[in-house]
Image 1 (cartoon, rainbow over the protein chains, first blue to last red):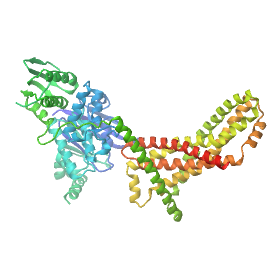
Image 2 (cartoon, rainbow over the protein chains, first blue to last red; image 1 turned 135 degrees about the vertical axis):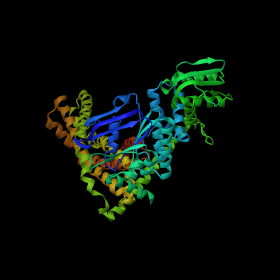
Image 3 (tube, helix red, strand yellow; image 1 turned 180 degrees about the vertical axis):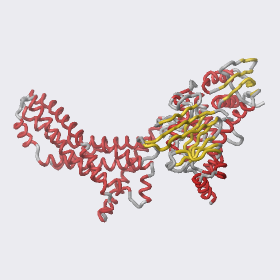
Image 4 (cartoon, helix red, strand yellow; image 1 turned 90 degrees about the vertical axis):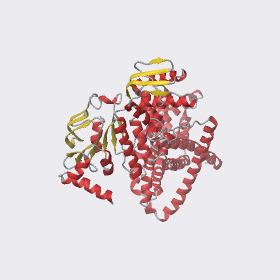
Length: 247
Length: 373
């Protein structure tokens, strides 16, 4: 397997106070890698550092073949789905997706539209191409956000809580989409979530963060961690979620 | 043999009605690929040979599929030949799945007439909403009189400070400059006719009766009114206003009344300051340009500006304050959509308030002239 992302000795935090310390992991090409943990443990903050929107207190993030995340932003070499989808409210879904294509490719306008429509078709939103974000549901916004993240055919996607706040059916459809992207397009996906059903279905590898430990307390196949982890915190994480899910 | 059309950026070879593509077909070389595909379409190419294509990305697959679809629409079939399993899988992924309609949705293209109609309808709806809101507020006010403690007075001091004390410097500076400009323009004309002493009458009455209240209201509308509309608009789109309702709080009593009250209390005070500094602007011109003694200017000012003039100005300013508060809050609370909706609400709040201020000022002036005030 080829490494796509390497994180070494990463310490991150706010106002000089470390939130996570000495974080280290690798993401292999084509896998779905999940960053797990309870609320407030620093998952989304870690993601902001992985995509170059925040500078670490120490350590490094390296995107293989691309350099640091900041270097990989112009032109964007990876796609990002933000937790709130972050679609531009004054633009239609089509225009949201066409924006990076117009900026970073030399495609003529008609071809930009063709590619943008194809992305919308891929995520099942073709009939809503000319709708504003405010006119579609939360699940549709998430799918449109993924389509925008995919616009430039990035081989690496970062998804922040893609299924948070969605009903189980819509969340399951998003999981299907993630699996399609990973298995059919070979896209590497780094996923921040605490939705257990989603983790167990789509993730190949994961790390579990803990606020008190200020770091990684477990890593590996999420199904193995659920069934065999000796760490009581990891067991509690998976077990508690499983119980709630079983109900 | 499946259907697909494509063009290679690398080494295209066009045999008799066959387009052979080779190498990597990616979005970064999408422009030449698209040009070749369109040429192939125009040349009635029947086959696109992908035998030597080593890599295809989603963007290139989208362009190929779009060309095939264009060909089908013109009753012309293009066949794809020699696609490797990986390439074929991607083409399939970006093709229209069976049983799904993949026709391009028609964009909304409003005509000029429809635009005018929509705009007129929007204005009508906004006017209706504002009147309905004013009605609700009046009804709410009556209820609040019976239970005044239900109004959220806790925010009132902070709101007054933001609208009043924080806005004082800009109100003072702008109105001083207005008095200065008015004084200078007046002094030049009055001096030609030897009517220098009447500078105080001109500046004093203009500032106290009209310009002081109006300029102050315009500044408050741009500064505080816009802030109220944006704040309440953001609260609305973030469902904070809905949350208030679910907590048993009436948004009017919690958000609207304190803001309108804060403006109603503060704007007349700002106007009083504006009146004073505006007259001082005239004094500065009188002393510097007309070389009048300060005491002479002030004596003429005292005889020209009566308490009734000041009171009519302050009465206007109170009405202006209520107008700014109500319109800004109504626009904010009727915000729909996200960031763009907040921007639209803020803009419409300022525009409506400015129109309203001028209209209200005209009405006041007309009524005061009828009453002989």
